[in-house]
Length: 96
Image (cartoon, rainbow, N blue to C red; front, side, top):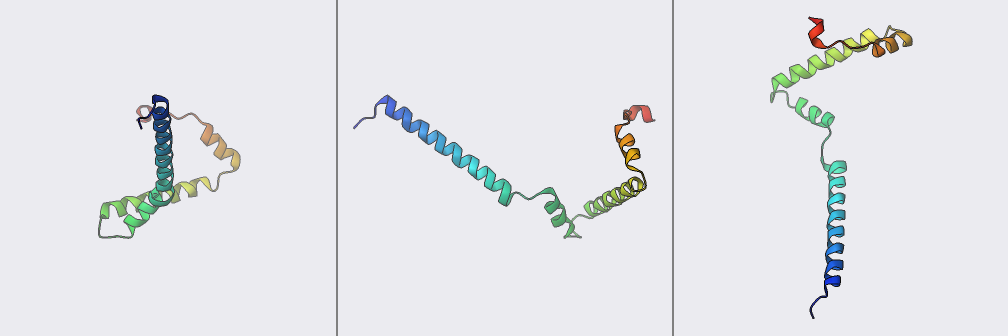
């Protein structure tokens, strides 16, 4: 019982759509259930203190920097923050 070309094209098309749907479903499931977020990765790495001391030092420096930036922004009124955010940034070459 040989297949007609039209039947074969229909079967191949159905297989392609099914495989694409399966791949898309697997990618969504991976993203939702398996792939860790950056925060979870950092918490996992921070939970192992002896593993990477430089990472812990850099993470604590980053936390200190965020705290200091929050402290600088907190006393400013809303208009002051908006003006700071809307001010043009100079390239790093001009700062020196």
